[in-house]
Length: 445
Image 1: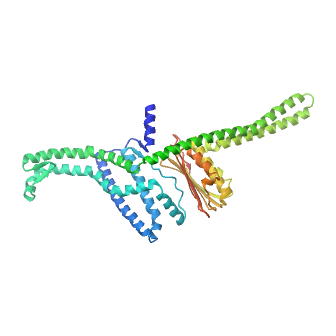
Image 2: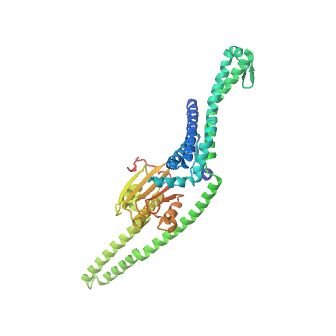
Image 3: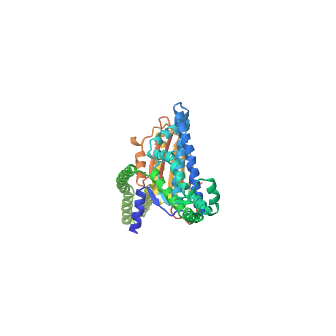
């Protein structure tokens, strides 16, 4: 068990994770090689398109096309990572920060500028540059071996006619000048054909997975930054936990505990007066009942602040939907989570969304808010978009630093695009797996 845990953690630190690949039959493997070749040729066209966009950017036209070109390159890199996982069993995680939804053209240009400042974008560009050359070489190895094997098998029947037309025939290292050498070529061709059908396709897919990991995987600098980020997030998580415990202790001491002590004193006074003044006892019991109800409400509020009961019962999407009903702005909520998330992740996401919405109400001066919650590619992705005055900055507080610290405990990332004058787009993502669900229910839409 410890060995397996260590292997899993080692794979995650390296940015990759081995899973069982989908192999299929020999024909399917060859077709995958052809598919990779076609994708590589498409990447060559994508590279030409990107170069044209860069050239047009100097006259202003390309700036409008740049966001779409970067999105296309990133989508291609994501496709290659998915193929590496599905066909080679190699998971290559992308170090992309969460992306807010697209807004006006000027917002998309800011997003393109931000993407060009990310290491992962330049790795994607490098892949688009080199894979149109390396990819077909890897992908066509099985096809070349199969065609070569068929050529060798045909030589015993064709070598005489070909010798008259050509100045000598060679098959690999064998000069074919007689029937005996033609048969030897046929034997080598059968071996080459078997290698091309049975061995090279699997080898090609394995090399493809390693090639994707080499170019699109995290670099040592990324891993160093990640380790530092995890160390800081662990410290922040411990501080947040300590602060949360102190808050709960303070709320219990100043709220429910005071009510319960008063309840005890009231019941003691009622006990001493039960025979002498029944009317006073009735008044004291009414007071005790009121204190007990208030203590119960305060305990419920405290529990709601730790983990809302609706979140535990109905899940994240419905809990956030209830939260938005209390907002003065007009809120549009879209969300779909195919199952239940782990309770800590649900709680962190819920309170992060609550803080973002609270920030909109207190500082954003917005009239419309859009909240989007989806689970895609083993990630919970959330975005909050408002038409307020903008200017939100985690460095200046406004509760956003607390959201970052809350998400950091789960290695989550928060991205904010909030220019002065608005609009504000905030998004975060948390990597997690869904809990096993035997009911087949889906939260949200």
